[in-house]
Every structure is written in C-alpha cells, then in structure tokens.
Length: 273
Image (tube, rainbow, N blue to C red; front, side, top):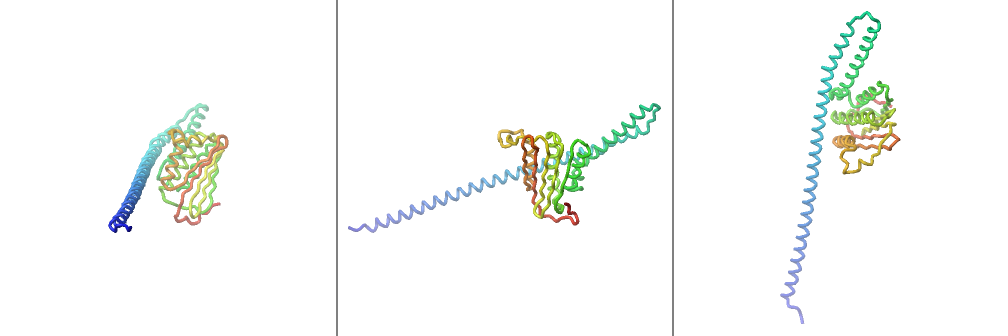
C-alpha cells in the first residue's frame, strides 16, 4: 500500500525546515562567535593602546623631569660651585699648609663641577638627541671609565644608522638603566657593550662579569616587586617595537639583549669595525 502523497510532502517539507533551522542556528552561532571574538580583539587592542599611551605619557613626564633636573644642575648648582672655586682662587694665606688645602679644595670643586656637567648632559633629553644614540652610549661608558672603578669597552659593527629620535632616546634610556643597574647591583669589574648595525636592525648586547642573579622570580605573576625595573625596560622596548631579553646566572654575570628593526637611511662615511 503506497504512502499518502500529502504525508510525504509534509515529511519532506518538515525535513527541509529542520535543515534550514539547523543552518540558521549554526550560522547564528558562527556569527555570534565571530562577533564575540571581534569584541575581545577590539578590547585587547584598546587595552594595548591605552597601555602604550600611558607608558608614552610616563616617559614624556620622566624626560621632562630629567630635563628640569639637568637645567637646575647647570644653572644653579654648577654656578654656585664655580663661584666657590673663584673665591678660593682669590684667597691668599701666609701659611703653606693652608695654601695647600685651598689648592686641594679647588681641585675637588673643579672635579665636582665637571662631574655635574657630565651628569647634566647625560640627563638632558636635548643633549642626548643632539649626540645621537651611539655617541650617547659612548659618552656614558666613558664617564664610567673615568671613575676608575670599572673597566668598559664598546664595539661597533656595521654602518651607523640614524633612526627616529624618539626610538633612539628610548633605546638609550634602556641602555643607560642597564648600565646603572650593573653599577648598583652587579659588583662587576667590567662592562662590555656591542652595537651591531645591519640593513634590517640594530642589535645591542651589554655584558658584565658581575655576580649575576636568579631570574626565576620574574616568571612569577604574583611577584609585583622583583624585577620591576626589568619589566619597565621591556615595556619601553615593546613601545618602539624592539625585542628585549636578559640572561643571567648567579656567579656568571648578566647579558642584556636589545634589537630594534630599522629601515632608515645610513650616515655616509661612518662605517666602524
């Protein structure tokens, strides 16, 4: 006995409706997931942009503060010491011992004036931008060498490339903070720095022969104090699109690695080996 044509039509029509309903539900779920993923991505982008803007603002405030300190040292402290040195130079005494003390005082004040000038230049954003990245690093290492407390060396490979001033400044501040951390914590006798220029990137490696330290706490998300300076340096590097890493083992020293992609025009006649 054959099936009723109406029943067949109903079954067929119902099946089509179920298929269409299933397709609609799947399409809706797919659209919802895509929309949700897009919202998450947009939220992450907004958070990243906010973090970058906040970091940029902090860096600008920091640079302005350093500039103000530099100007204060140059205009006030330096002038006071210069006047003190002039007063000593015009002071006459009969006793030989007192005269020798005055000469010694003049020498000490003269050194203090020079040290303050060096510090002022190192802090001044405009001066760093004027010198450029490579010369600023050279200057920083030369200051340390003059102290006689630590040996320094700098090797430059490739043709020196001038890139964006802001990137140069941030890169220098990272290097500067690395050097200061070595002086403060490493108990090192030597700092070795290398800057390698290629057409694609500039790579900076800074090594010391100090006591090193354990990096394990850096991977602990619950630790908000250890390595804060290192995290800040990493954030600065990320802001300008640079790679930052640090390798250290207790007793063997520390190595800091920086690499910034560049596509700028090189200086002429500045190849160093």
